[in-house]
Amino acid sequence: MADLLELPDRSVKPRQQGLTHVLDRGLSLADIDGMIEVAGDSVDIVKLGWGTALATANLGPKLERYREHEIPVVLGGTLTELAISQGRLDELISWVKELGLRHFEISDGTITLDHGRKVELVARLAEDFTILSEVGSKDDTGAITPPYRWVEQMSRELEAGAWKVIAEGREAGTAGIFRHTVEVREGLIDEIVHGIDPRRIMFDAPRKHQQVWFVRRFGPDVNLGNIPAGDVLALETLRLGLRSDTLGIRERG
Image (tube, rainbow, N blue to C red):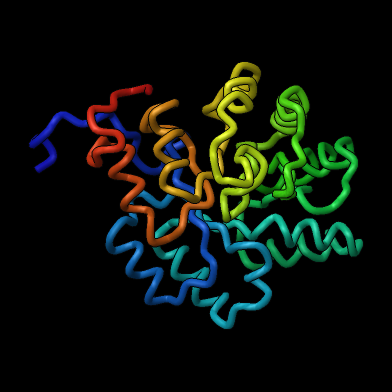
């Protein structure tokens, strides 16, 4: 059926662009199996949300299941922030290595962290891990980081060795690159991508209308993060123009 319709070109795994970064909020092994059965070819990386890795009862089997399917896992940046605030970052790094994980998220959306210190951490950890470095605040009360600061911070973190920079939107899609009303800050995005190659950015987009906006704006191979596990296949149909929202899409919206 691959030639039934003309569809947009879509990169295949393992890919560097068009990434779907899935948020695991506490999936069971059966949930993981179901997601992979239905849409495994569309799952590029999974994040164990916030601090769930320390609370879940199935961490070992869960990591093994993802490993069997060659899906990389990263722990939530909240754990990194907590470890930094408690002076236990080295212990967290050692644990991540013991778990056999090759990706590491660094964020400062909740704690106060000097940006120079963050850049140093990115450079240090990039020697051993593939780094996802998150930029933007989790504050959803209306506080706005000026666009030039987004560009400045993303640039420095990429130069320090980050694989991708995450444009913060929270798992609710109510902060950072989104208004508290969940609307996309379109002007902010335009200014960010004027200074940063969008292929190096992972845009948080947990809600359908946000995903639609990014696919229309950047095309099927935009990197999207914090995708709910149950929405992976739906997002892939958006990327391929198989839903009315993106019908007829080509390389770039």
